[in-house]
Length: 189
Image 1 (cartoon, one colour):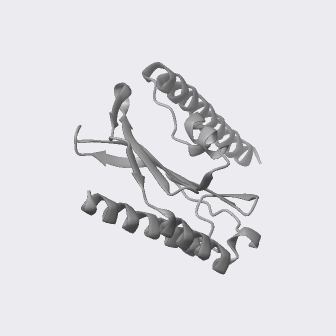
Image 2: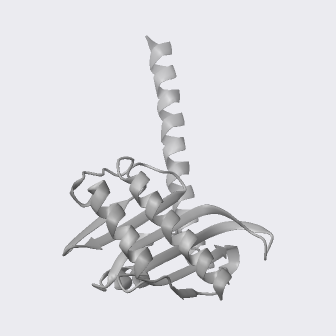
């Protein structure tokens, strides 16, 4: 019996040591990130995104962030994020940036274009046909990346977070319409 007690005592010491190391590592990472200014990317924490979502004329908005992006400018890994807005008037706004250690940040130029009423009508048709505003769209768990979408249509507002499987095809179709229209506008200018 004393051998079993000794083994259990050793296992308890090992487990306690591992827990202590985990706590110390967590504290070190927290204070290190505070010191270097590195913050986790989260579209939910973006005050700009939240402010834009409050605009009643935003028909569609999406925010994407990832903790694993390579910057061709700095030749480093880091985090990146982008935000897309389409207004009921056809105005399109796109912003994106990359952030790395040591407060390095690379902002891409903000894009603003007029996509027109035809694009807005196609997206409204897509929203209506898909019945996305009345669907249940549970969030999916995604590691090292996140998505946040919002639709405002017919007086309703609906928000989706982390690529909701049942609604993702509709959201992807809307993104495709916007991207194709933005490319067409760029080619004609």
